[in-house]
Amino acid sequence: MLDNLVILITNAEHFVGPCSADVLAGHGANVICHDVTFSDAAARDAFVAAHPSVVAAEATEPEALAAEVIAAYGRIDVLICNDAYPAVRAPVDEAEAAEMDRALQSLVVWPFRLISAVVPAMKERGAGKILMITSAAPIRGLANYSMYATARGAGNAMVKSLSLELAPHNIQVNAIAPNYIENPTYFPPELLANEKAMTKMLSNIPAKRLGKPEEVAETIAFFASNRCGFITGHVVPIA
Image 1: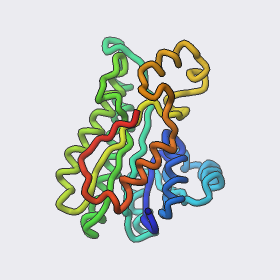
Image 2: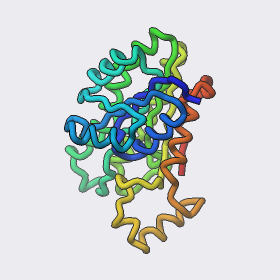
Image 3: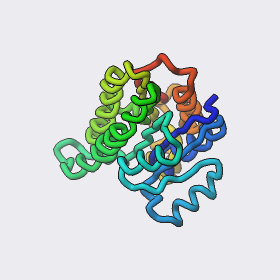
């Protein structure tokens, strides 16, 4: 389904990154992974050892990352911005501006810079796909998590605007917006062990269980594939 496509995925150590990298590689893609931890060679080597079907990029800044992958492979067919940031609980009158800035930098500014660096090569080829892994939180609203929901909502809005801007160049831009998916970034072991908290949480989920990373990864694979050349500008909740 993804034979020989060059796919760059960010934040590969976290959120749905590890599972998605393996699933995409399993579908035949050339998967290049980036994570801030990869600035440490030992961490980078450990990731590749755990996921032998992928390659780890070394660049630390978005512009250099795009250049590194294009220099090595000649193109980037699919960019997956899998950026994550802890959802900090804070009523609006107690929220700190510095925390809001960190959320925006991680979930909006960094991926925007990377997209800006990748798009010229996609335009030149007349093809490309950009997927942002965001959240369903801003769609529903999330009391006391306005900083996180605002940053995620900005990512969803970015997708809507970029899809219109880039459609004439045969570049599809979509967002996968998961919520209630098993991963230690948002559902650490101590939360999963809290029976009262889990009972309350599961009551909000139609399936009455947390989703599996593989379920998100297979959705990503479809949107990354050539089977999905017409769909653009969508924010797809998975919850």
